[in-house]
Image 1 (cartoon, rainbow, N blue to C red):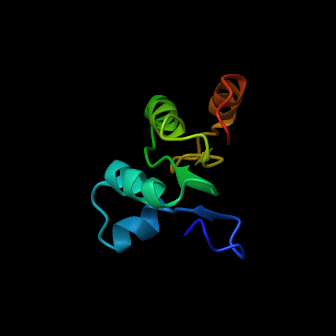
Image 2: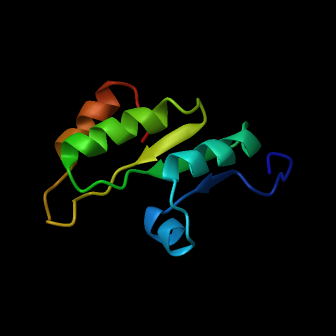
Length: 95
């Protein structure tokens, strides 16, 4: 996938991945990153709890230099994630 110059990067969506039958999100991410080493790739946290979102974001960040982490603006209960985004940004997580 890195060889295709018409593609700048990739993004993932936990909902669509679940619909496609992906049960091991981290395993899927690691497998994808074994094929995509040079292009940017975004993975979204899937928890609804802000503390768990933080932990997932750190795990995803640590998968590779080319990884960006997607954080929803709110969780499903409408709780804003602004403070989480600021915390992760201050820690150098690519968002």
